Amino acid sequence: MRLARLDDLAAVVALTANAYAPYTPIFGGPPVPVTEDYIPRIERGEVWLLEEGADLGGLIVLERHPDHAMIFSVAVAPAFQGRRLGIALLDFADEQARSWGAPEVRLYTNSRMERNIALYLAYGYRETGRRANPYRPGWTLVDMVKPVDRAA
Figure 1 (spheres, one colour):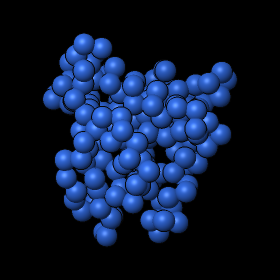
Figure 2 (cartoon, one colour):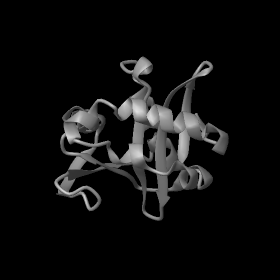
Figure 3 (cartoon, helix red, strand yellow):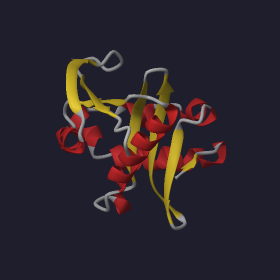
Figure 4 (cartoon, rainbow, N blue to C red):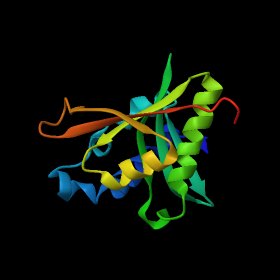
């Protein structure tokens, strides 16, 4: 894992678009991470890259808050899906939260991403509520949280 640099911007945008592409027809528009401006996130040190050899296999966008870490996006390149890179990225979020002294990791996802919700539940997240997406009328967000294991 390494922090993204501004010269990684095109790769970050392309990987995110490719990873989320299956959801665009389901949602009737691109998921929020696809339309995000990643320049400020890279400048703030929120974008981490998971490289597999010379290839970019996945990325995680992780925000540091005083009382938690917030996952904005987890994206795995289609060619690398099924290799547990998503789990490696979630493990990294736990490690970062622990190193920051944050007691929990939070995330939110679209209610139509049922496969992802099931994965998060299996990984130890619990649903804390559902709410309307303030940026996309008609879309519902699922809020989830996972305590950080201090002993790990």
